[in-house]
Amino acid sequence: MPTVFVSRLNRQREAMAQMRWVLLGALAAVCAACEPPLEVGEWKCAAAPLFKPPDGSLEPPGKDTVVNTSWESGFEDGFCGYAKARGFCYSAPDASYQIVDAPARFGRKAAVFTITTDEDQDGEQTRCVREGLLPRDAYYGAWFYIPGGTTSSGNWNLMHFRSASDETPLEGNWDVSLVSTDDARLVPWLRDYVGGSMIPPSSDFEVPVDRWFSLTLRLLRESTATGAAALFLDGELVVERTDIVTDGEETWGQWYVGNLATDLTPSGSTIYVDDVSIRENLNDPP
Image (cartoon, rainbow, N blue to C red):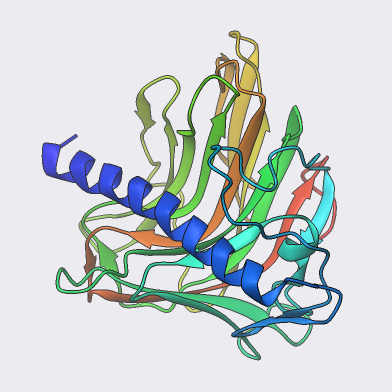
């Protein structure tokens, strides 16, 4: 991988951690009593006191949350599905996330994540995150709507997994990203950070534009060579790896869904997201 690309990814990860605490600190000020509705931009919900500024430790507010295989958010109540589950959303200074009326897959609402890879701006990422004690075996899915006309010459990431323990810092485990082919088609690919490999995208699978499609990653999380990972596009298996190490000895993790890119043409990108879920089986709704 080019040194410049790795350097940019490292800077993004550091900035992401810093932005998160800034966001949580701002929300904490709003949520002091926190029985009244919490309103930050399009985020409106009656939430428990979820957001706390850092107390000097590296432990995030949702570290000890048990993440179940029966969670979903269709954004009908804004970003409250994340707030009530002790998750969070964030954006770089020149990126944004909000709730829109259209296009929505079902219902009346969807989330939209807008970024820019313009080098004169700081706007390469915006995402929502579930965190806590992740299930041993689960299907992590979301529906995406990507307007046509954009190509990527770097990393265009839609899902990202990280994990940590009391002794180890957060580290990336898995990516679900897009790659542009020479004829400007978008194909999905899966990156394995734990094994240190890029699982090549298959040209047999193309991500559609200007319509909704689903991406789902099944993770059987194991620190020995007994784990598994499988990526599905609209329910069809794209790639599968079995008898692999998927995680270290980590006890908790994070799942990111949204929009992150390093080099897009044109530089601006808007991605719509709906019906995010963690399920026990692939064919469970939504």
